[in-house]
Length: 322
Image (cartoon, rainbow, N blue to C red):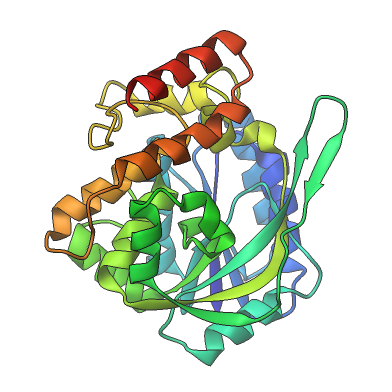
């Protein structure tokens, strides 16, 4: 049993180094595969020099070339991790995530309890507000639950992504057995190379597996949300890291399979990924998205939009759809 953490990063050498140190300080059998997608030579050199000087056999540094859009980079990093690591389970690790002391062994034990089953887990958050730093600690039971993927599909179809909380199996909160990743590649051609790698993985996983386990504990802390693509999108595509994301994305169509195509608001990107998998697998496993629930889920993101004019525009758009 070895847990392999794939740490994709871009222009964030200092954050990545802190994340690496957090992982290597944990007890247990772990490998860390750092994949650097930086176009900044200074940032890449800083991170490469650190990894080389560490001389820890558990740490592997990779440089992605040419530079790729984020979803393609995550997929590239996972492919190289499978090829260069003997880990039995893999997870994508944000460079903005730090582990609490001695928590990795709890995750390893959960994976060992059912070695062929994906295990998801929770995290706490710290985030900036107007005047201070806020902290959000998930209410947890400490228990290990088994969840049917059909339940995840049903919740998403009814616009209840928020209600799933950390039990929603996105790529960055899961440890995935190697054989599941290989089956996913066989079925879909890649793991997560779509509009958003986290949700692309989620629905592909739900298409090929019947169950997973959720460790209802907050094992790590996610921070530095100024560097979050997701939060930048939720706030209205202005500033943050979203400009860099869209520049790398290029002129390709954006969210054409979403119920409201092309709309950059809240979880619309997840509904786009749901419909992509629904079309690919056919049959009755993925029902049509309930439009009222869909609008309700999108409307949650209005609270994050900082520009009053854009918030009013988005509210009016949702109201025009019902």
